[in-house]
Image (tube, rainbow, N blue to C red):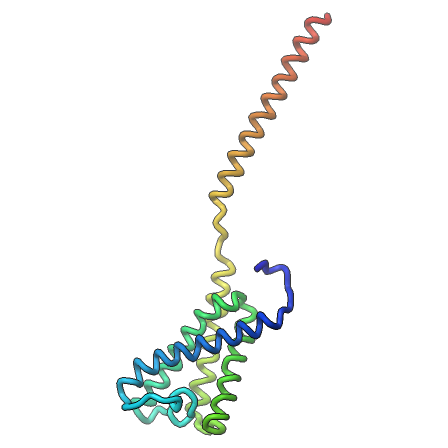
Length: 182
């Protein structure tokens, strides 16, 4: 994609949002199964969407919080490959967490836990800022053109040699021509 050509493609935006949301929940599921799955007898969607599980009063709650933070770091990595632009990272992160909020409201009601809000707003900030940083690093990375440059240099050298050959040949023929006509 060329960065100069800005084309508004709603299907691309929707596809990016869906992919980002799916990857977020996939990584959240992996981290929850690693950190929380070893502590509970049965994993369920409660750990994904119920605000009551995000608590600092139990070890399992801390494992849920750690899973959310680790997923936010992974989400920043996903932004680099899905969104590719630093200036779009905040928009996609806010969309990700707003959709997550709506799903949580549908699943377990309005999140009344201050811990849930602090964790998710902090995760939003981590994902957005780290995603922007990584995207900026990728955007500012030098484009490797050494192979192209060497081929161009060889071609230019060849053209220059041919040009000098033609010039020298003309000079010689002009000198010879002037010798014969004098």
